[in-house]
Length: 176
Image (tube, rainbow, N blue to C red; front, side):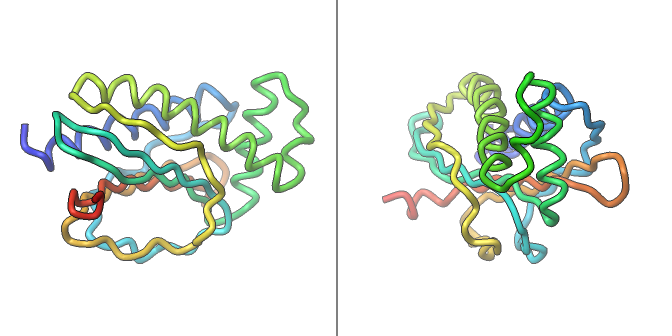
């Protein structure tokens, strides 16, 4: 399997598990809005989100990168966190403040990562993910031509509400 095809398959797996997690972990209805290989992520202003770095090997070759879950509007992140909290039997008021939203989103991402890691392993990916961290830089830097970058969107019911996921595999030279 060619590297770009393998990376694209990894993005498809993440896309499927993210949609599954949104639907199963919350009462919100969502549809996949698209999966695109991105050369440049110009639409990168986000007010909330989390980043998870990863590294390891893919078929004996070093691999690393990151996954970002991002929101243009804090209310969307808050609505998702509240819906997840209710579905998990937690107090929905925990999503009334930013720290609570961040905690619920971290757990949400941990579920997605666990499901994704399991399927990625079937393709020879031996990956270790760092814990989710608050997205500090609300702008995604332009993608280097050596990197493999993907953008996934999920549209939630009720107006122009969406969740963006970004997956970037860094070029092996950046991993040294």
